Length: 225
Ligand SMILES: C[S@@+](CC[C@H](N)C(=O)[O-])C[C@H]1O[C@@H](n2cnc3c(N)ncnc32)[C@H](O)[C@@H]1O
Image 1 (cartoon, helix red, strand yellow):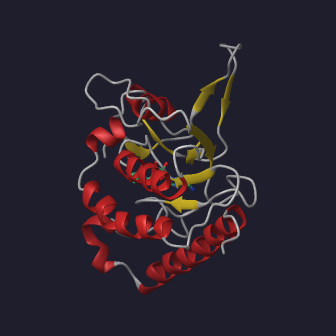
Image 2: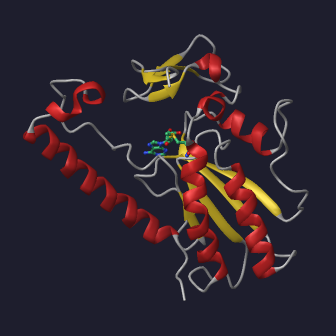
């Protein structure tokens, strides 16, 4: 998407001190400011329905059988790398229904949306509460569903240990934690011409990153049956 480009270090105006600025430590991927609060991400996302539809049977099966067993406390779902939450709304509706079937109407549900701190959380909360004129309401009128956000980084701990019943993520965890080397050629246009050394560096980075993700999620997930 054209709004999602590499920017130079971002200048952040700090609350209560408009003449004072700080720069983030690293260059970051972020939505251009003019798109914040406009649900730009999900409005422009394409082909995501197929991915979410493919994922749905696995998620519903996990809730329906004993893979996910929420004995006490709320049933906690976390969407890692959620973006503005617009693309996962149908999935969340289905998850809520499946939890209701299994645990009844009184079971408290917590849905945590995790993404980088500079994510468009304003759109996320407007979308999930059905506040845009051009959208249908997502959440059923269910007093036992609570939405929270974790503005962190999924290469780090995002939630307390032993907290999450169900972790989902779509089109996010292929984003590496860092660039292992610069590429000679543009990978999108000329990916087949990437050198073995470059490819190997990216493969090793991806393997290391995946391990970091799994170690952090293993701590956050509740111990299963
Ligand atoms: C391609 S978008 C997908 C958004 C949404 N899951 C969807 O299916 O439309 C990838 C998202 O992952 C987030 N992301 C990438 N790396 C991340 C990280 N290390 N920690 C948290 N979020 C990350 C990005 O900020 C972005 O919102």
